[in-house]
Length: 315
Ligand SMILES: [Zn+2]
Image 1 (tube, rainbow, N blue to C red):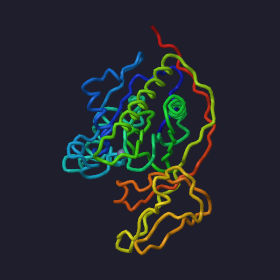
Image 2: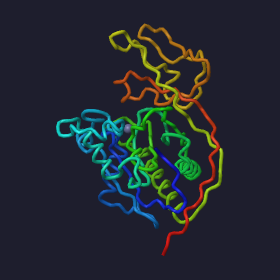
Image 3: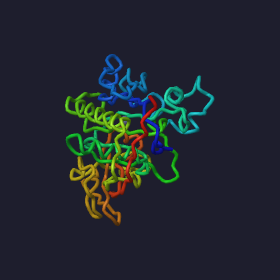
Image 4: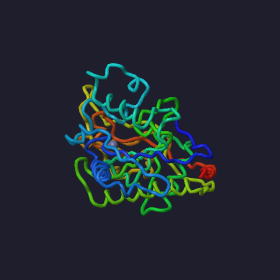
């Protein structure tokens, strides 16, 4: 569950996690740098805590050892008792839950920024569970206004689905998904962009803590519908690949009848839905193991209510 911070509560427990996927190197190396020199994460009203979320995967420069850490923050995994011989990421999720949670409790951290990269052309994507998270929607709006380039908002929560992500351990959270960058590679432009986004998010929290209120606004965001699988044989072999006209067109409109795949035979496959969608994570390397070619998204406009400043803290 995420919630708007109630009036009277500043956010002073903030974490910045990288290496949740061990081969997404912008977050890995920014966090390693901040662990040595955390001054960049300090603001007047708080200091954020850097944390390397999956050190074993990071060391081997792989996404994960046993299972995806960023899908491991469900009640089932967090309360699992077979931790000694169990999957490494389940133990790691439980440790993170101890450090920054417990998830859903009053003791949980106020905010987690979780840093990711994608090989897809997602630019500087801002990822959160739902538009109902008013505080984080205000942060997204602030980041869009105060940083360079597009920052599409990606809402990943599905109705009735338990929130499984690392950032869900805190009361509020934001995933930064920057790309295109190959996994296992550092690109200067992507690294500096991520650094600017984190700085801007920290500035927003600091302004809020200092007593700034933020007015209501309307904002465009993309809400997940469902994954679109690659064309596959009954045994799971790929029968084709993302169509050249779709490649790199993340968050562009895709209309019924537009091409989405090309088969190895040369045949084209066209989108058969009945409405325009906005694909995201097109041809993301990490989703091949799931057979997912992209995620179908719908473009929505939301009216976000004002965010009231916290009351001044007692001297
Ligand atoms: Zn990731």
